[in-house]
Image (cartoon, rainbow, N blue to C red):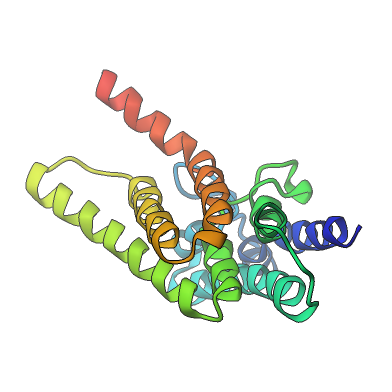
Length: 203
């Protein structure tokens, strides 16, 4: 029962899309009108209103993942199996992606994922994940520079996270299941970008 409650709280916390709310409240702008994906996430807040509002939305999206997971995993002293740990950790990410307040069409969950891993590793895992995501962006930049083919951020995010789960498998195998669940969820949330790339290749 405690695990179900923790997952429910995490999901509801994750379903509050702060980037969308900030743009609506301060500028009366719908960030779903921006970007190819038209989602209410932090990246479209960047596109709509620039760095400060985008970073504020991203920070709040990360914080909601951090707080719910930190409380139930670290402060509530629950004894969790790897499977239960994965469910509790992924509940705010799933809430962000499948927000019931947006008819199940939320953001991509990247900022919330970073917040979750900061909570799971007492800052350590969040920093490592950030490094791998930066490496993914760097690899995307070099690929574009060498081949002149534009690559979507989805490839950088998913590629970076793939490196992160390999790191966890080698160093912290008890959290590997949670990371694997996260990898598939993030890959799913970026499916439209992969589909667009495939259509471009076929044409």
